[in-house]
Image 1 (cartoon, rainbow, N blue to C red):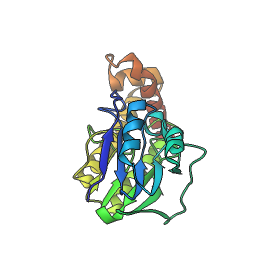
Image 2 (cartoon, rainbow, N blue to C red):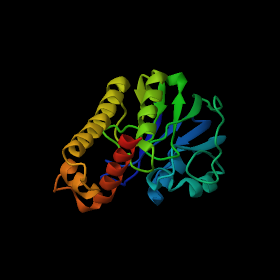
Image 3 (tube, helix red, strand yellow):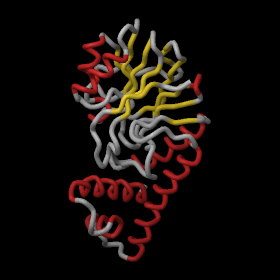
Length: 242
């Protein structure tokens, strides 16, 4: 049992090849991370759920590449928004589920990439939709949103492990067919970055955030990514100080 997938035309350094919106169920349908406010993408989603009796829009978090079309799409489809990231979203209680005609989707907290971030577990398919906790390409996601985010992120990786899923459907990049290996890889990248920053500080305790960014990411870091890199370093410093 697999979800349907519609990919938005919004490639970029953070979205990779674009936002993947997943759909579970046909008569009672969940749209997971509706994606950016792009007319062609919303139109494709509206067409895909034509004839459904009930539609939910599920949000893993509020970043615009995931939730940008949420409110408008909900209006077009008379759909309930469930998850986090928009004020109008319904937050499920622990153990509470959305019941599609292809199985249940249960929400649980996986903060780190953002303060409010959830994963939807599709137990019937031994699958989960982790938003941006892990990506389908590479070995890292951005972690720098708030103080304490690195510790939260490492905890969230463990929560995903505990689900024992056979497949993960991240919002960016292709499906992950070896979740355990990927989760280990993303954790090792994060811990390696923590060790790297700690080693630099051991040699130069007065190193500034700017100097750390240049040492860790190199002088060729694109200007557009500089701000995200600085926040990631600041989050790592916060983790080391805690």
